[in-house]
Length: 261
Image (tube, rainbow, N blue to C red; front, side):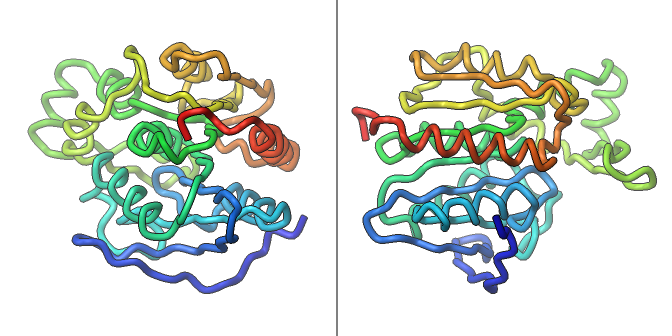
């Protein structure tokens, strides 16, 4: 399948930002909405593959950059989970006329859950790819000892090596941690009633594969499936892994419409 979709981005203005997006909406058909990961953008491998699949299957498609990412305005260090959730809701509410599916990668998997609960009456299904809910607390804050936590709070930022580039760094602002606590979803029941599919690699070094099971336990209905790939890492973007994502999309879009939609 050709995943090279070269249409120029359009922009939507919110009260705080100018958000870049690419949309291909289809009358009387649900829309597949892709939510990318932290530090990524709407033109990543998985986003393009999902977009191309949606168009080929005659679904609508929508992908966009959160504030501070890609071609959207803002600085990433000013971003928070609450802000990126509001970005997602603003884009969906403005552009998607009917029901939709959410595909969320890493951070996008956390946002996927938050958006699904905020727009429960319109969401037909969820596909999480190495979904990382609560990562600000479980994977960043809790990984620090007491002295490191104090230094983080005092300095306002944490600098860690990038897992993808030997000489690069990732900076997390302390505000990301404090805001994240207002958006934690694990360890409590999530009000999600649509079908859910959670894909996770057993070789994921950034988000433990057990997170997928934690998400499944927090969703109180039967149509939740966890699918592990023994060879996949956090990116989940090799050709066979992309095939798994698209096969999962094909399966979930054939499920009956949830009764609450």
